[in-house]
Image 1 (spheres, rainbow, N blue to C red):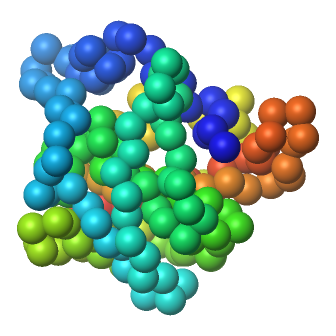
Image 2: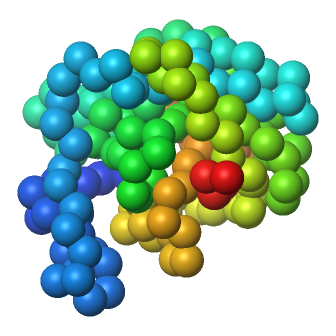
Image 3: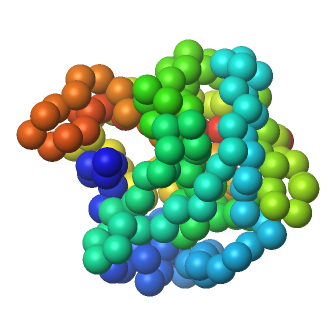
Length: 179
């Protein structure tokens, strides 16, 4: 299953800072696809009693679409997003039904913790819970939420399943800030 509406342009992949206002004042390097000890490997969300492994995801081969986790019980970190603690956005998606089935129940101030491969932990506080139509997903806004230097974005399917496109017509999007 692909996340419809999340298509990366070649310009974004080559220069993500180009989407930021006053981008000349900010230096952002695209993430390098490597085996990274700073990559997230586990996510914990006490408010929905979630503890789950996180796998590393890239783009679907031959496309500019983000791959989805290979198992409904896994969350997936997009390896071209930031690593926890870095400037920018850590982007993690997961299936619903599946690992992120309870995501829509999160509210502001709920806590999310990521653990990385090198055993570091990073704690985030939920700022927003949004329900967005696929056609309205703004990738630049997700990767660079206004007013947040280090953010975590979680996303999962919501709404109704549309047979013609083999996915759901909406997404639940959680935006959290590093604390």
